[in-house]
Image (tube, helix red, strand yellow):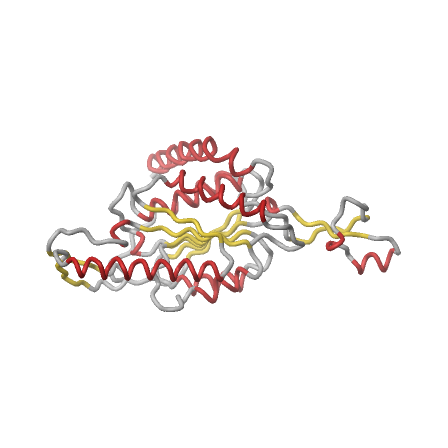
Length: 312
């Protein structure tokens, strides 16, 4: 067991080096958090400085008591908690590209965790495996993050057809327990069926208070069917099986159309929730995808006028 943990830590240290070398300068730069945006948690009041302070942050109660203008500072995002909701259900144990979807989920946790942990953030997680989400308390430090990554990497695969707690249920639980503003990262394939998706309402509720990042993990075989003759399709959550003939061009077209419609519905639901949307594919370089996403977020931040609240 000790040898296994040692090997895991060596892998995570190499991953940390890759993440920090390729992403550290880009993601932090002149910004205080993983994604551009001002702080959002009220801190102490101080004397107003004309020409320097935003009048929208005026603390009128303190001003009235002291007869001197005061503003309320905001705690920087780097001091806030980061909570990750990590989908580890059976549908994530799949991959036909360079990795499985669960590997990309771990990579996303590592990328966010290594970069926020270095600035003092507390990182916690809800892991969706089995009928009840596992809660990992928010703590600081690299050893805590290594422990979280090891838990994800060494966790048993979900048995086919065993089912798991719904993403929406886990998000509702997080909304009930996490009251302080912070960064919420949801990492999933978002394959829970329905229109609208059952997770949309709880993620929109979280978006009213927290900064949201949704990491959507997909595999190319979920988007198109190859022409390989008879193919057995399995629903990993229910265990249901179905034989289909991929020789039918019409069937392949209908499958691709349904997949595009599903992904469009996911994107629309996340957009309505105000979440930043990062797509990772098992057949692409996940680090490059994160770089593209953050560059786009920074361009958007430069075009969006600042407000007194948190970043969307």
